[in-house]
Image 1 (cartoon, chains in turn red, green):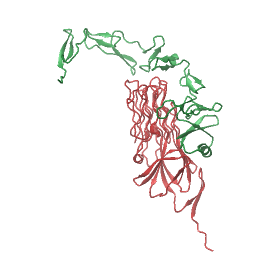
Image 2 (cartoon, each protein chain N blue to C red):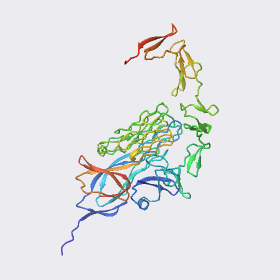
Image 3 (cartoon, chains in turn red, purple):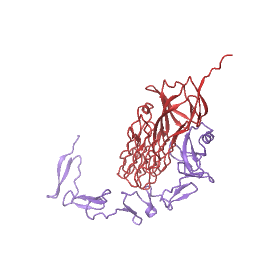
Image 4 (cartoon, each protein chain N blue to C red):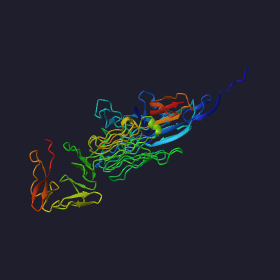
Length: 306
Length: 218
């Protein structure tokens, strides 16, 4: 009788994956994640122009993925007018990582967009004081050991104030918008580094705000893809987050809805050569390779099996 | 994309997520994977009206549960409605035909720029020029905290909470309160093609005199 050949070397219980085994021909590998929370809704009904919504928080982390295992994740939706954005989460081995949604812009005479929640932050703090002329606070990005600290996304702007600019961010910087000093809000800043730049998308742009600023006169988290919302082009409704990538909503009388979040996963191309299977509602928005990495950008929640 | 709201045992929305339209078993998957109750919500529904996502205008689409849910919203299980728990203004009331907060006084239809003014619980005809100004219902005007100095041009400084006086360009000019501007004793001549001059005021001679001719492209 020939001996039984053992091809399974590891086994474990996963939080959402159930019992699984690891194929030694496809060893565990390190995957890197960017989680982008949903953008905050723009401020509505403000007597002085609703503030732009805050950009969604950004969480950067790395962990080990085990081929043959299924992992679940949720993409945070953008907040309605005056509402915070929802969280984007990724769950593995009983751990759930969270990028918080952006804070809401405020109205009722209070400018100021929401702070964007970072990985170690929260989305409860509405940026900007209860007054005019203040900007949304910059949100924190959870800084891993390989990331500079204090990387953040910008908050939305408020009554005559620009949105805060986050470190390592670009685009969507708040800007004076209105034809008159009391008719403006501004967008928060976006976020980008080399890998996110490789996707061709901009993430977490803040929303433009502002009551009554004419079309083209209000500025937002401008971006080709995934930026923040357009500013309110008329006195009634702020524009929603464009391209649904964690941009905040525009302000205005009715406010704008924030854009939803996203997840970017990447790994060194040689560490895992298989093709991940995205199921249960997940949508791969884009994928590619860059500088020795394979990346996938996912825009709706679901599961992934490596 | 389809949106789903997660509600807790108190019917408070605790999460809202995005799932592919093509995944028909989303609620079952969300419930099995993340627990509690999930209910579909629509990005395009506000006030029980469906809006075209491209144009932002109402269309004949079917509204879903009155309003797009966000974190902190309430779920009325009896009427199957999502709504914000926070009134837009303290004096506004919840209209259960739309599950939105509406003012106690309807917005005047002939005041397109009207803004709600909570201190007076009424609509102001126009937005306030400054944050600190208060609305006078009788005159339908915004008033500064300090009265504007009479007979002299001044601009309001919100930061200093004071009027900043702008002196007249010449002693003989008088202040026109209606125009909020300094006016010369006589109107400046108009510059025309046949009279291509710019004009400057001579306060001693009390008359306008021509200075640099305007560029004549002919």
